[in-house]
Image (cartoon, rainbow, N blue to C red):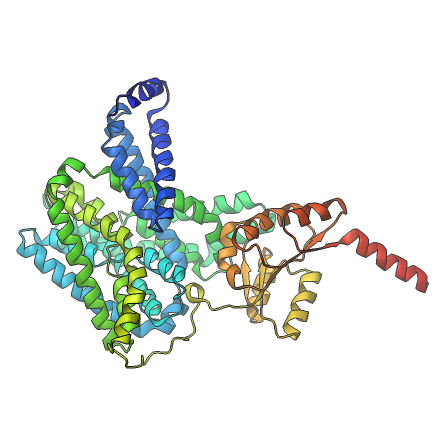
Length: 563
């Protein structure tokens, strides 16, 4: 511990240890993340690095040691639960429909080949069969959150390479859910009287009961609850209801000894096809991001630099072998499925790292004694390092593919079209108008724009209106314009204009600040009920403001003249 920090931490002894630890952690996260953003690196790696710094600086010893670390681990479990909840929500049968061949054939071969090779290597290396299976699954998983985000940053989100990555991600999601279900059996200690068949029968019974309860909740309870809450127009109550539904089903899954993660995933599935989906995503994302930060920090807390320094060569070797082997396997599979060489290479690089669930599995395996502390440090450090290197490798992969093509490598055309229809993640809306509110004004504006051949996207908070528009085929989001995540879903960067058709100046001002953070040039049309709001809206970035009082006065004067 640096001498200058000791008096400062000693002065904090009167504060709750967990609060002090969180203050140190989150401050470190901000500083490290700013540095990584300047270097265009993944923030997930920054969170992990912060955990390593805190764990090896002596702060934990001064702040209660194991007790504080245990509480951080408990909060990180909540982060994993919210990750699984959003995973369930983002799981799209529509996406699966369009990429089912890439998902089931490509994803199946990828997981099968990676698990077989990694498992065989681990078993031959002296790890038990249980440990080899768990390690193989962990290393076969990929960080699709990082890869898909990097595809978007590179402007390649509609490419066949990105389609391949999305398809394999869907298959990996399905696989890990099933694996989480059987994980308690895999980690079960063998000192009880139950046979393996009794455990399987118990698991199937508990799983069947949970499916029934979750189905009832998804079909009746959650939709009725969210419908009732939506009619109150209370944002805080809506968020509370969403988090409560997630925790409630996760709690039932925990009571049935199926795990909190599985329960949270099913809760996400319960609302994945509802009109509330985008509103829920906008509400839950900031909470999920906070607790996921704690998860990655907690993984970093498990790293002892003294042990890692001893095993630095195995760490680098495993990271190199992992990324090269997975990139090669996936590139070959993608080529066999008809992708051009360049796109197959990008898919291979995009999926070559370990993933978030790799860290979850390795974290769960640590206390089970499947391998010693040195191997635990090696596996976790290698997984985290591969995720940290992924954005830089993907940025290098695109010019590398172009260079190889110029040299004559793989000029055969892809047999898969680049423009296949995609939902959600692969949306291709472009040059569209975003209309916030679908009252009488919004309806007239929407009709006028569509008559002129302009595609429109409606953002609305009335559930009945959203249902009607979806039946009519209108692009619509059930979302709140005051949430930053809403504007990411609207593809604001590709839009031609934004119109606020309601006269609530306070809500419009909140949304304007978010819009101008991302697009300073986009025209924004707004309404103001009172003249005092007009200048304020223009000052905050509205291009044109329609004053209801002036327009009403104009109409009254005109009608008065006629009469």
